[in-house]
Amino acid sequence: MKIVVAGIYKIIILFLLSEMVSYGQKNEIDSLLTAGTLEIYEHPDKALKIGLQIFNSQNSSVRVKIQSLIMISDAYSSKRDYRKAVTYLIKAQNLSNPIDNPIIKIRILTKTAIQYQQLRIYDKAIQYLDQARALSLNYPIKDSIQSSLGTNYSIRGLIYKEQLNCDIAIGYFDKGISEYKKIKTSFKNANLSIVSYNKGNCYILLSDNVLARKSFNEAIAYAKLIDAKSLQAFAQKGLAEVYTLEGRYNEAISELTEAEKISSDVGDLVLNQGLYKGLSENYLAINEWGNYQKFQNLYLETQKKITESERKSVGISLNEQQKMLDVQAGKLKMNYLLMIGGLLIVLLGIVFLIVRNHKSAKKQTKELKGTIKKLQVSSSESN
Image 1: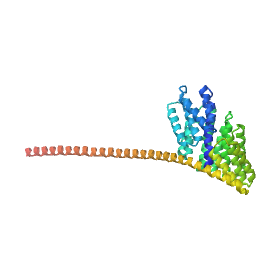
Image 2 (image 1 turned 90 degrees about the vertical axis):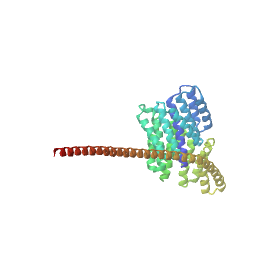
Image 3 (image 1 turned 30 degrees about the horizontal axis):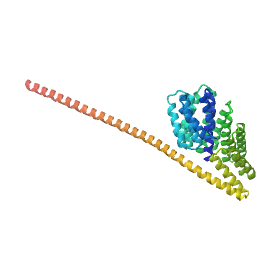
Image 4 (image 1 turned 90 degrees about the horizontal axis):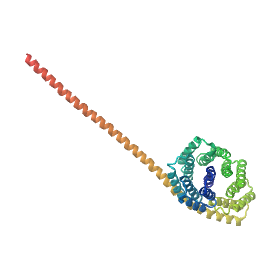
């Protein structure tokens, strides 16, 4: 699960980067927005500062304000503060409701799906992905939705990897790669690196080391094209895992050591945890106890930090689940009340008909008695 979380929030961020290019740079605020988005993963605090500056600017249009809120939300996701990430996403959703802009709606729907995926509420995530895909497929300018579709399929791959199996997930990863390759900008290389990395993880689970190595090497190559050190480090970590499974411990240590070096400024807890764990296990395998103990301690320290962060996320997930249950309970209650109301109306109708028929029958009986009495009187007079 930690591998999945790491892969997915990079897809979120880099999806936003490629979407930014499609809007074009119209003014200084747009340039600031792009600059802030580029800082989301490596320096999220800078992105937060820029995002708030843009949102509070009187010169920002509604479109730009929405983009700034999404950027802020993703910066908090990068910091693994999912509570605040969700808060700013909701603000973006509310601000976008009156706007008739399919591209913005697709982005927000996709982002909402990703947030639900992070919270492991998969049915809601799929629901939003379906809405986003429908809008994307109906959008007439196909060049504008390739990134959206690529991300949509990639997120589905991650979800199905967790819910179903890797064979199905790989099919969606391949669809995502196919869409990303249609993009003309260099941002596609980041997303291609991420999806290839996740494919590699799937092949490890399927015990196919050959295809796993191929996928990780492709992920490394794509990352190097754009000098994305963090993505390269994740891919090298995956490649090192294959080497470990094959008993090539020194080669694994070499990959992990380089990955740790190039990503030292990133500060990603999940990445660091994976690197420390890999290094400790491989040093243990070659009986280097000093290095084993060093990286084992670093691994445990990082794991503790991640657990504290995930505890907050679980709280959000429980709250979301409770909200869903409350909504369902409300619907059931409403349906129950409607049913009772309907039955009461039917019963009242039946009672009304019975009373009316009773009165009608009573009147007819009275009239009949009157008629009979008249006939009797007439008969007596005749006699």
